[in-house]
Length: 87
Length: 416
Ligand SMILES: Cc1cc2nc3c(=O)[nH]c(=O)nc-3n(C[C@H](O)[C@H](O)[C@H](O)COP(=O)(O)OP(=O)(O)OC[C@H]3O[C@@H](n4cnc5c(N)ncnc54)[C@H](O)[C@@H]3O)c2cc1C
Ligand SMILES: [Zn+2]
Image 1 (tube, rainbow over the protein chains, first blue to last red):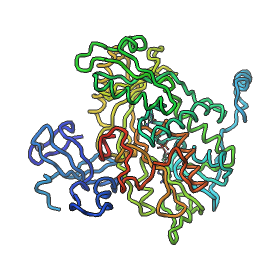
Image 2 (spheres, helix red, strand yellow):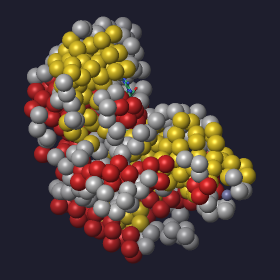
Image 3 (cartoon, rainbow over the protein chains, first blue to last red):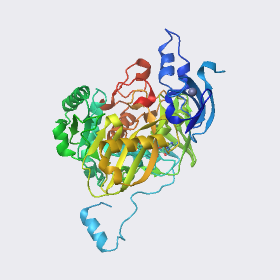
Image 4 (cartoon, helix red, strand yellow):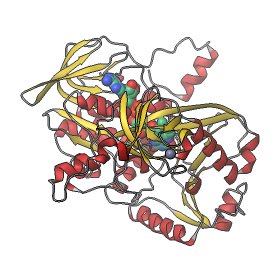
């Protein structure tokens, strides 16, 4: 599998560190109820299909990427920088 | 039909014409007392113990493919009871005892072989860790023997002891650890459950769960609707999809784990050897193939095949540890979908729906758990109470912070 980094271009999967689903972008406010923290840290939609998840370009530009891909076919549908994400 | 050595010999003499199918192929009935979703090791063992321990025999196991086609037939078959933290240690200890009586109980040869498992360590800090873990195992009543470097050499003379990056300091020997034939475990439980009246229904995918006023009523399947008083979700890597049919969002992320087997060789590796620093472990099957594997591919995936970087990594780690395997040819590699939980430990629990139960989150270590998971899930479904050795496998432990993080790696699904 290869990922296209918006800054570095088409790169080998080994250059990236995997974190998990995009839920990690929605950190609850301090003092939020426990259920929100549970949701953020543990609970996942875990789709067999299209997923948006977080990859760190560790051996490249050191940017976090938001990758849209298919978890069944391993097809990459799009990549964007977390720092410049639309939604 | 009861199996025995005599039966094998007489059948061999008369052309093997007397064998009968090991289980029936029934059509689904309209209603059951219990429906188990998933005909893997855990689902089949649950059905078996519902019948055997609790006398509940009006049970169906619904499997979307064929029995044993999931992870139970794809794993590398390591069976061990070497966990450390309370919650896990008593559970896997119980499981090991069930393994030791399994063949006699099921009247089935699962080729369970307690050849000993050796976990290597490579520094003083790791040595301390394995001493502590060995003590926890001994406190639980299981066995552990600390081997210094020379002790490891006696057992595993073929390792590269001089490795510069990870010199071998010693290992923890778990003599009762070993392996078993994975398919046979599924078949043995299937046959035992069928004999006690359980209907094993293959090619039957569950597509919906019927719930009325918070109570489970049955399931929708590709072979029609089936009513049930109780339903158990036991579908390993597919847990999130099936639980979503009941409106649940689980603490699970599905990942791929790969494994490899070489051509058959004469006996060279007598133990199970685990090289944690290289994320590599290996054993030799009774057919002679070297069976080995490594870590997850690390990103969420439902493709039952892996990616090349992990193949390369596993081969490199194997060559680093035991250069002698370099001449062996790899025959096959494959992948299975793992239900990774955020603390690396499983769930055996009720759900918010009355009569609906959940058994999932086995990560890459659920083969050794098959008997105890079946035992405890059956206990929970039959009595409504958690079995004492699985009492900590609660679904709400994530919300309350009572995590069972054996490896202490934190709440990230792929790190366990
Ligand atoms: C490569 C690899 C190596 C491993 N090595 C080890 C090891 O050495 N030791 C160890 O202890 N563990 C190991 N494991 C883990 C172990 O195999 C799993 O944790 C365990 O088998 C999972 O439980 P199961 O047997 O019930 O799963 P499965 O056999 O996967 O059973 C789940 C079943 O549910 C069915 N299903 C799914 N959705 C539906 C539906 N909607 N309707 C009907 N049926 C459905 C599936 O078809 C499947 O047959 C390994 C796993 C892999 C992949
Ligand atoms: Zn980059």
